[in-house]
Length: 250
Image 1 (spheres, rainbow, N blue to C red):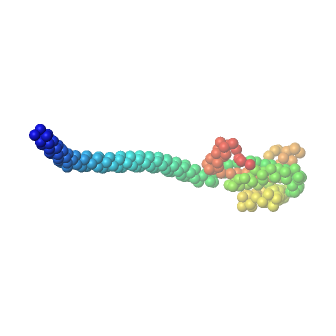
Image 2 (cartoon, rainbow, N blue to C red; image 1 turned 180 degrees about the vertical axis):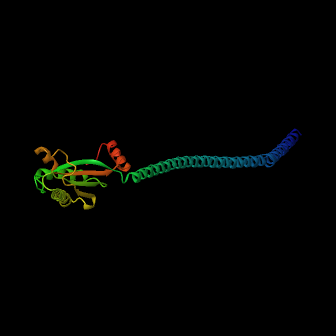
């Protein structure tokens, strides 16, 4: 009897354990299905959304940085363009002023083109009743020709004279021959264009010294050579520029 009761108790216990285990499994499955999996799905969705937001934020940052860099580049280009425009404007103003200055110089040159002024004088002496040049007088003409070698605008006045010895007609012809000797030497030896020379014989007129002494008559047997040139503003400007830059370069 006692053994039968014990067997029944064991059976009830086993049935209870089986029921409890079954209930436990059913509850765990319910929690897994109804709670854990939906929660995991929501968490996965949140993570995915977070990743998407992070990607979008990164893209926004990249675009913002690119936009800032582009704006800075355009601003720098604009500043450079403005600086170049300012320099171009200054260069144009300088060029315009230079044109005005050059026009002013040309106007002054036109006013003075016929205003010839003496630059240098030379006196060539002759022996009595002679019209040929001595070596000493040729040297004077060599020096004078050197003076006009670098000049572009100039003329030479060549004026022949005699003393009062002899007739006036003879002396007039002699003064012309003396002037002609000077002109020939300058044109043939130094290649001075004949068009730049104006020659005239005055005979005994316009004596440099009184004719009543030997020394006076010697001074009157002469040819006076004078260099004349217009006082051009352009030449003065060039001379000033050369002086400011330390003179003419070799």
